[in-house]
Amino acid sequence: MMAAMYQTLLPFLGACLLIAASPGPSTVLIIRRSLTGHRHGMATVLGNETGVFVWGVVAAFGLTALLAASQLAYDALRLVGAVVLVVLGLQALRAARRTRGAAVADGDEPASAPAPVRESAWRSYRAGLALNLANPKAAVFALSFLPQFVPAGAPQLPAMVALAAVWALFETGYYACYVWGVGRMRRLIDRAAVRRRLEQVSGGVLIALGLRMALEG
Image 1: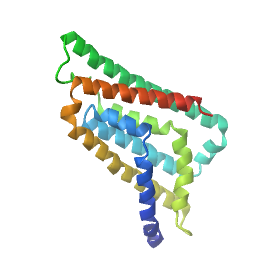
Image 2: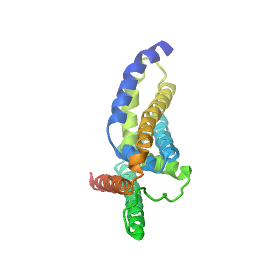
Image 3: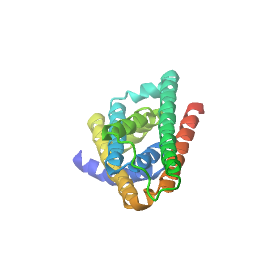
Image 4: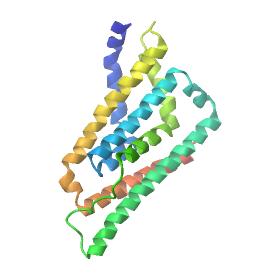
């Protein structure tokens, strides 16, 4: 079994890379939270990947098949996910207004953005986790994705759980590069105008994704 798992590992990691590289709500949220600091960015990554692993385990037990089969359950989770996206988008827009308000109060555009409202990294973790767990597409995708890489003859449950763990760990490393990249651009991002624009763009994208999720059939 172990030899067969090693043989499927490389194509599985290639597929994980393609998935992670596809832009989506998680990417937007991770970048947006990384604007607050490295700790918040990594907490968001860990929350998102906890969700990835949870959905992988749920898929291993076949429970996501119930979600895929029940239109009512799927639609309910879809609407919850839409609300989560819109709320996160509104939070970003409020952060942009705070930056703008500080600039107006000073009577000029400051060289650096004002210090962000202090938040716990736990809040960033919860945001990443909620975004992933409230996405029914993530659940259904895990159900269809992971079984393709279970070697023939291997016990499906432990194999899928192991693949889900590898998937989450791989994406943690991948998204950590995003957090690092935002940190490297700190001097540029800390400018009030740049930070405000990034918050506005990320907020607008999250709201648009939430509305699309709410309206899609």
